[in-house]
Length: 151
Image (cartoon, rainbow, N blue to C red):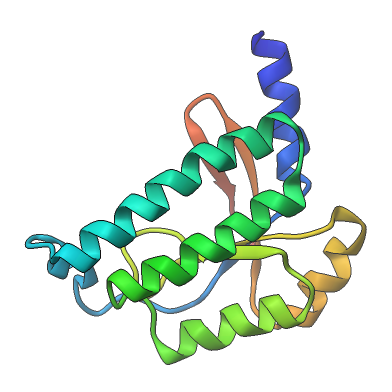
């Protein structure tokens, strides 16, 4: 089982590109989640529902479908809380225009890292067209390991 999980982790990694947006968060954008509105709760429930479908997509190796779900969840997340900025929106639009199936900002919003799901056959061209720093990473038992390529 562990070997198959490791293989699946390596396989999905081929479809993921991680970027450092170069944007540092200036305030805690998650503050608005301390008291949720009915609309926010409804949107978060929709996102939660997407995660179940996302797990199914991983198990059947439908990475394009997984990317589409990421895109849907990102759009919902932006509607529920202002986690994005015009600069991040520009990076996201560029990623989608360059062929990504979907993506999302990692962390609590406002900056940091962004992932995109892409066809591995177009990965290198995708990275070249993005014009921001891609970060090498691997998935391990402890989560995500980032490899600093600048050293």
